[in-house]
Image (cartoon, rainbow, N blue to C red; front, side, top):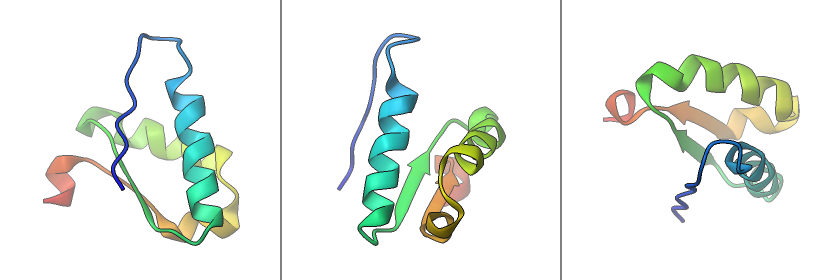
Length: 68
């Protein structure tokens, strides 16, 4: 399933995304999180802090450029 989350700055997009990712990972799904190339390292640091270690093997943070 593909979900696109959009909204104004400060509207809670990141918190919603982390919640959805964690729920999907707990169900055993593999998740891909696509971010702009310049944001990938920042996002990896954030999700490493927020997502429990046991769920991380099924999470891939990537950009469209790296994915192709």
